[in-house]
Image (tube, rainbow, N blue to C red):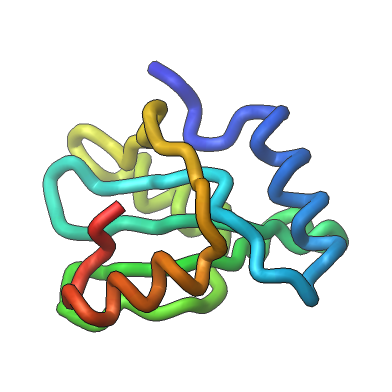
Length: 111
């Protein structure tokens, strides 16, 4: 099984985190295969290596951009029968704000 966060993706997330003034494309899509939760993650705080930034959809019809703890995502994944998964086919091709606008209109992440 592919880890949620591999070394190459973590480096891209950190690089984006060093340039927070930009509207980065998401690097990773993480989802719950047993529920409606999805995260499009674009940045990792290079100082604490735990705080991710992205578009978060907890399955309640109100996706929003914000921060999430990598350690908490990994802990949630361990507690689920199947675990969170990384969409290996996802490629962020547009700025995160574009995905956020579409998600707000649809009430969920559609990417």
